Length: 143
Image (tube, rainbow, N blue to C red; front, top):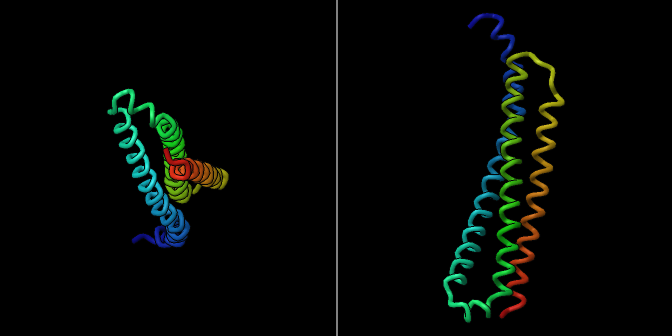
């Protein structure tokens, strides 16, 4: 290994060290996305079952169907925002290494992407909370 590469090792090492926390965050986001996609699948399955009923039966479940439509909207929005968060974290990690490798001074870019990631994650979790409230309303107000 040439001498100049040895002197760059601490810089690369610190970049790897700084990228560890966001990678763990990506793991948590993946788990949240798994929960959201399962909830979306269940809501869609229930909506399909209601749509398969004859019109007379379907009218009895009109309020539930309206809530399911709202739930699907909020889940889809949450999934979109949390996916944007994950993509922003991936981009911030990638730019962290690009900055180190090319010896650029762009801390605003990396921190801006991370701020975008946290903002999207917060908004996505708020959408998730709204969906949970709608799901609870479905149970609290039985047909």
